Length: 136
Image (tube, rainbow, N blue to C red; front, top):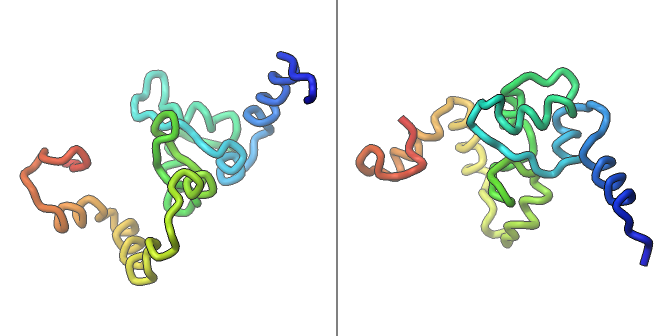
């Protein structure tokens, strides 16, 4: 077994977390998971994490690019954004559980219109505030 020293562990961690600024997609692929935090004190966790790792990153860029990136929102240790490759490992599903072309097309339409929560409310009615995922 190779000699595992504190210095080697430091080099390993630095090589995989602190890297030259790159594109948002490449940074996410390299990190695999970025913790998300909606509280801006001093800033949201995802913006702090990506600020030094992505060229010309501005607060909110991750959320703005989300529909075009191959990432998911999920819980790993904390809530955050995770690449699909890790997501698939954490949530293996048989191919039959995947969305068909019609469902994917409908989801893209809803996201493009910003109508995701309206569609959820239409499909799952209930009194306001009855579900934690309900947004005003």
